[in-house]
Length: 255
Image 1 (tube, rainbow, N blue to C red):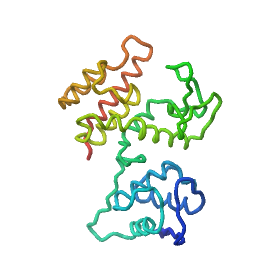
Image 2 (image 1 turned 30 degrees about the vertical axis):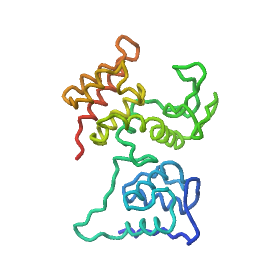
Image 3 (image 1 turned 180 degrees about the horizontal axis):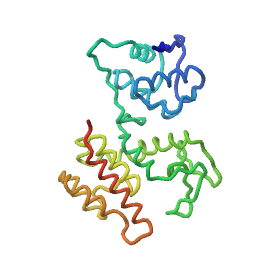
Image 4 (image 1 turned 120 degrees about the vertical axis):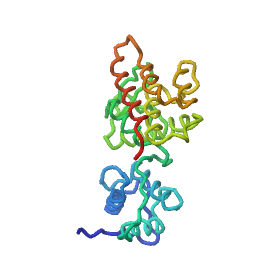
């Protein structure tokens, strides 16, 4: 059996967003062994690693600031120790993001249907905006992209999580039934909202899905999702497949 190497920081040493080096890579290995997703094991403390650290801290009743100091280090190392027979280490792989509330099944679905470009390209819906990655409309600091800008795949993944968590999730969370939904149901709506606008609930153009959600008419989910496929357009078939996938995810129970 491979021996697990514990994290060993000095008393005045911290790992945080932007940190780099062997200890960050070790932290990422530990997080992954605990069932969390820190992104690639590359020794760079990016958004995905920050998200995983904050989620770990939430699970262990620590201050969820995303900074690894002595308390978080001790909790990480303790989690690596063999657990007594019959004990269960709680691992939440269904939610993530900076908030720890982003439904990850929806992120996976978005990536299945959205293209990813590592070079900035003109937004097809506007004349004065450029997108990049998985459709990210602005940089992490809020500034716009310029034609010719490039990013790495990791940066594209981080930007998607950041945009979903900051721009889309707060709006979706205002849907009255949101807290009654499981991660798959929320994830389906996350994908739907990312594609058609997160403020769809209650909008005059989305009366059908608003009614179905409001009344929890889950037997009408598939037929309702498929309505939003832009009939007669060149993208109808692609949107139909996406709506069917979203409906399938919505109706998939959490085991």
